[in-house]
Amino acid sequence: MHEHGHIHGHHHHDHQVKAMGGVLIVSIIINMVYVIVEAGTGFWSGSLGLISDAGHNLGDIFTLMLALIAFKLSTTHSSKRYTYGYRKASVLISLLNAILLLAAVGAIVSEAVRNLASPDMRSLDGTLISITAGIGIIVNGITTWMLSRGDKNDINTRGAFLHMLADTLVSVAVVFSGIVIRFTGFTMIDPILSLVVALVILITAWKLLAQSFRMSIDAVPDNIDVDDICTSIATCEGVKDVHHIHIWPISTTEVALTAHVVVDELGTSPALVSSIKDMLKDKGVQHSTIEVEISGTECPDKECN
Image (cartoon, rainbow, N blue to C red; front, side):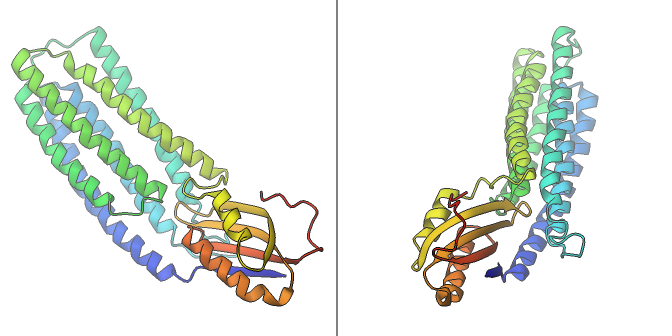
């Protein structure tokens, strides 16, 4: 006997996606304006720190655009060929985003090393650098605050949030660089801090890459505790055993599960299955398929996973 359950909250999910889409659009616009200002100032003043930060911010704009696309794809409906719609594409987008971030790290490190080996002796305007980066703290800070209100369990939202948080910290570092140059004339601080920027981005990108890769091969999402779910199902009244549990991400925001549940009497299964589904929704599993088996007829393999 098979019971299939789907969460009845798609309208709520669509509303969340629409609201987050608005946040992302506003974030893209204000960051694009800042990137133009920062890059222009960087080239005019000769600041590698501003130029590299502008390049990374441009990458973040692309990240925000990808996140926006991912959110739109997460609401697509199923078809005969794509029974989950295009929701899985949101995971692939997060993987692409992480790869692009690693490429950005390589570019920043390469330029910083080149400048350390053959420093540009032009005088850098520390005051201008600090003012421009100070504006960046405000822009990145506002964007980070807006993204912090999104779903932390969604890897694209969390990835965008972490990137913008890192950018805020990077802007603080560039302000510090400008102050040092202004009062000491130590221009080497600029490429040195560029390497620090690269390290911050690398840490963020590596975590995102690892999580995105795991989700792309249908690993259990990080926010799901398999042992807790096994125990919770097994301790439901009427359940004798639970086995063949499989959990995988449908998208960056939705999780699916299949499981075999052993009971004493088949007549108790409808209410039992309904209660199990409600419990699973509370634990972050939106789509569940429960196969009910009568005690003594189940498969010999009773491993939970």
